Image (cartoon, rainbow, N blue to C red; front, side):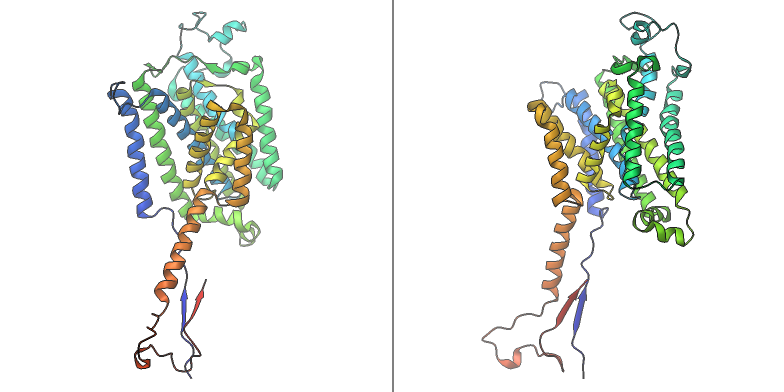
Length: 408
């Protein structure tokens, strides 16, 4: 007796980085790269001219996207929810800002070799930790080392103590809040609540010149694309699979002999460094850095960017950062008093209806479309009601009906 014919199909889970997606990413990168060129080389009265405001705004959004991508490495792929990444972002910005403040020279309001805030606070000389910050490469070294070292020390003791979950999130938020209170003090030598501003030049070039802003924009775009490619390569490697195992089954991973401490510590430190570099790119384009960047709400916003776009996807955090900050720019321009309510509403709606974010929504649509197409392709043709019985498809021997379709 012949068993019934069974047709099994498994709707393919869409890969995010398919050839069409890569084509779209490259095309989007080319279009974005052309915008500052349209600002510099196209006359202001032309319909193709792009305003300096839009160039600076998109440059800021790309810095946020880099920070969101860095957070996705630890939250989306490793399962470590950080509510303190705003600290690493701000530390990178302050490290670069120290160089930018020294590059002002005697062009400040007090025409002193010291920054204006130091003259106002009656400083006689630079504090010791400002040494060598007049060199750009040394400032870039601080951009990497300061967030990286802080993340390494904090992460080592936290992960070694097996602190995780909500307790880890609360501790990172407390660390950020404490740092914010420290930087608000005038005695720390970082400008107090005003922070650093009124920058004049970077590497000898006027920082407000259209050509300088275009270069900063293009460097930010290139770094964002390179970070995306490098993060994808890392997550597709064996190391990345171990990180995913830390997120999904940490106890089993420890049982088979993996020391999860060093895997967590590496990705945590790497994420902090990338976030610091994003802050360093942010400061010269926005023109200011102050302790407000360390506030807990800023770190929570980063989490919302990742959740909105889709954590654990790499592309999702970039989309989420653009969507949320675009909405923020629009609302704070016309309706500034309702922005925080809108932000909370976005987070609630995403949590309830889009737990996998915008990218997850597209995945579901693709799954539904693929499943429908697979069923239609596998179903036998329906015989014409007027066709003779001999022309209709016969059921297999022993079959009690049409073919059974099973899906996974």
